[in-house]
Image: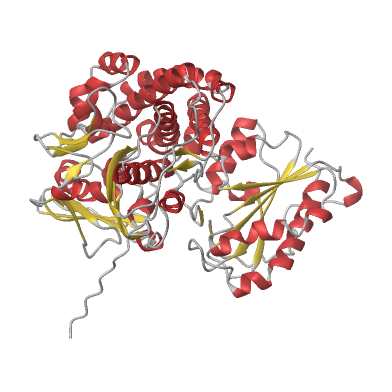
Length: 181
Length: 441
């Protein structure tokens, strides 16, 4: 996917705008995109391997490769979602976070890197429409530079893997605590 | 889409630069110049980077090649696998079991269903119904989008079951498959495939009634033709002007060439003429081999003749092929009996391998040289989109003068819609190896 760069690095609160005391704990699915044999595209899968023991019991981690509408339709209706993907358009190794609903209708600056599927905004928008409820959660993306078949992780992305793992954990926590009612 | 064109109040000039074609597979742009009613330039510019797959397979065994070439495309990996495996088996004199042949055809049906459903419902239908995207269309035509997704899901299930996964399948091997399938595994598809056939038939009704721009192209059509069945894995290469070649002999009639504005090689006939592949070509050249259910659906539309000449009717051709693929998949699933073995044994050997099959977007050709150890020493992979590129440009040049009198935004939409009619897969087209850089002193 391609993200139009904006000054909102990882760490800035994205959807959590309420007191944790008022929040309700909900299940979360982590959808991990990418392909492990395509250089930096494999970063999300490698980072996901670092977080298994840090996930609460109501969190399921799924490797989906190319995000498809069916992946989102399979998320339980009341659960939140954290989508992890590699991106171009941001510096390699930099991690950004966006609310999933914030992408819908923004196809000007956010399009599928792999062209064999609909762009993220359409996938997320269509899933929300079919579910009769907007998808709730966060996208965590890491900037990459090399996506060729057989390429290794680029150095800056490899160095950032622990930070990406931390970012996923934090995104899960914020999505779990977010009360959508 | 970023259209920078203007019409300047004139009805004889048109300048269109669509910097990023949307709802096509891959990254490309379109450049069109019409002056005084004459087309000066019509270019489908493909700038997606070359991906060097023809070099990646050198030194690999045939089975490794089958897995590697599947990575060329996320939407039509089976086409690459089928073409490669048939090329190797033909070169090595391997005869597969009839049950394996049926399973491979079922796998290909799955890919056709998946690819055509995506294109018809999510990429092309918004054009006809006047929406900028599938998401916008879904607000008003939710049932259609859900039907398309269900159809696509049925195709995905077939590929996932037989191929091991829905994208970039891994089960195809020289001589057969990496494992055999129990009858209960295959018949588990019955409900989904039967439902998909019903949706496919409704799809024909939906798209046959769409209003389409009037345009008649006068170009050469090329497809495979099989004596008994609608072409997928086997057949001879035929054309609308009488060509009749073995599937191994594509290079005796066609060749690839480089053009300055594209990272994809273009293919033309040896005489320089462009030609068109794909669903419309197949229906025109092999429509009498359609599954009876699909043949009846085609007859019901009354559009067989128009499909052959009007690219905007390709959406109907794809819908007919959705019926064909789902109906045939249903037959195969119902009749399935497991083969005695997952595959037949074979020994590596040197030689020349070549074959053509029918990808969702049209005829695909592979040729390989195998050294004495049976490893690939040279490869040529010719996907449908690189073969269609010259025909698309020729059709754009022929069509552009017809939209001069339209408001500019309508003209641009018509032109984009025309490009999408060919369902170009730009990622596939940029797989190639040789990029010649010429420096002038």
